[in-house]
Picture (cartoon, rainbow, N blue to C red):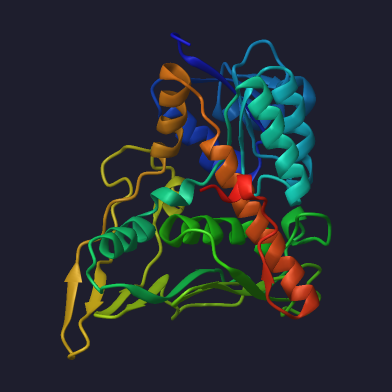
Length: 351
């Protein structure tokens, strides 16, 4: 491709409106041409001049677009992505990629057979908290890591009437926030040997899991992933213990907050994080390092560069399959009450 990449966005709910549309429009080389939505007035008010298509499958296969971004409910991800790939489109899917590992494998095979990009919208790879912790670990600030805790918490004691909190396929906090936690853990530490999980419904009347505690086991390392709808405050985003000290990152990235406030991605102050990293050296000395600024535009900049310059490889699709395997292993573990290995083939594990 030499011209701008024509993008179709399917779904204009919270994720599509808050994250995808602003980030796509902030990246050179991408043009948002089509939005699949049954609320044309809402789309037209925000995105004048962008075509609105009510049928999501018509949007996914439209001749007017090159790249399909799927931000619809989780149970629609696989069929819409299959339709888009069959029509020769590149595909970005909001997390999670699919409802299960079998669907993820089928999408990877379809993308490979057509030499098309298949990627999950892991925008949290470019959050300030994760980037700050990742930099410190890579620099060996606390030596070899032996214990890492990563949390995505919310305080929503009242159950809302939306599909994410319903009892349907793909609902619940683990499939909502778990993909971010797992993806970041795999980037930091690679594939675990075993997964042990507990999923629960703690709010009265909850129809899907609203609390998750998952442990990824590695040789000489344990990674604890936690998510809850009943945390009003007090839990650090990251706690990392190594042989030479500990890291604590208290506050989470602010980009979602900035987007909700109407800040345009790339504007002054975008991604800035005033909450520095605490570094404990084990002798009682605590120092602070400045946080790395976040910039979720980099996800879509990477997509644009890949499609404009080529070639398209399947690294992103393989990463998506690995994340899906961890998500599914956690569900299996929680149901069985035991630790389980990852159900990956040698090809999926890689060398």
